[in-house]
Length: 85
Image 1 (spheres, one colour):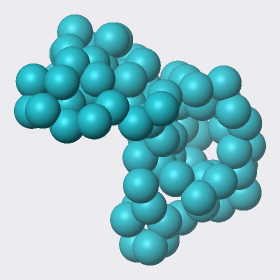
Image 2: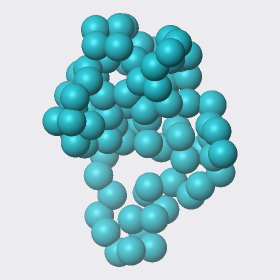
Image 3: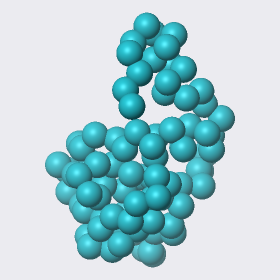
Image 4: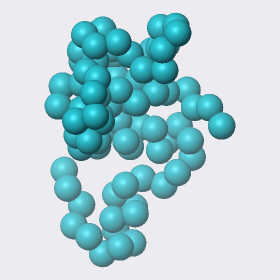
């Protein structure tokens, strides 16, 4: 299943973007400025360490909306966790 977004590490976090990844790659080349679903513009970073960064919560929430999943706040509420702001 394809989604209307791709994940990209940049700015110290994994973000989601609706930008088109340039051919022939499956990820944005290092240094390409990408618009994210949280409204930030980040310079794409590559490598294994960058993919291990934490996920931007705002991008995560937006992707959940796009694919019809419940919000992180709702998941945390059901699990009895304190919601982070």
